[in-house]
Image (cartoon, rainbow, N blue to C red; front, side):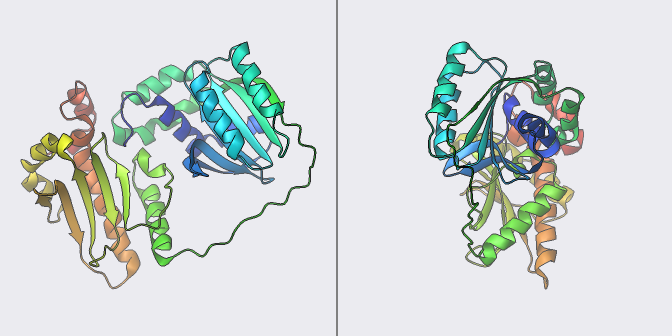
Length: 330
């Protein structure tokens, strides 16, 4: 599902991942090597996941409200799945004594691994800035994400707990798995998308990239945007896929087929039976030329379809379309 209005926590987590690893470094007092947004660890989706310079595993869970039992349950799942030598950071606008006592007990009950737990207060001045981002056209968000740099993300550490595990000898073990050609190709495409396209969703981590389709939510349930390097028939294309519940948006875009074709300067096919918009890419002599063209088309689809997939028929349609006039298809 795509980022939509009301997803302020997503913007905060994306900001920390891309632009503010220092906020995490200040908490754990270590340099952070890498952060990933919405990373799946042992089948559990983590808001922000990473590693420190010393090899510590980092798990960040943020909520833009006072800490509650629902998020405490999620923290409990992270504690259970986190390996030895991990730091878990729970950010919230406030913590009750009852919640902190429950979290403390969870950590102190851990005897077989070292877990550091931090309860940190999210700076209230971040909230109105996130509100502004929430009222920004989806394709403008990355350009404005740096506004969050004007204030500290976190105020202070409410509390810190460390499990009772005493064995400080820890060997980091990785299972080496050779990537398939498809995984290597998809990893390259995702990296190129992240370098070239201003769309927040592409920074979400995938459960697996050993798939034919690289798919992202595109504004609301029932709409996805896909890039396919090579399907079972050897075809390469970018497509926007709809369902019965979003057929009205698809039909609205059908009216603009000629304009869309003209704007992206490629043939655009409207598949009326499968409710999808698709543009095929010819076969190039060199692999990376084809990938460049797929990334270019993906960007074009975002640019000209996002006004419709995100905002068509909503109360904020006029406001959002005004912010992205270049995406008009009329």
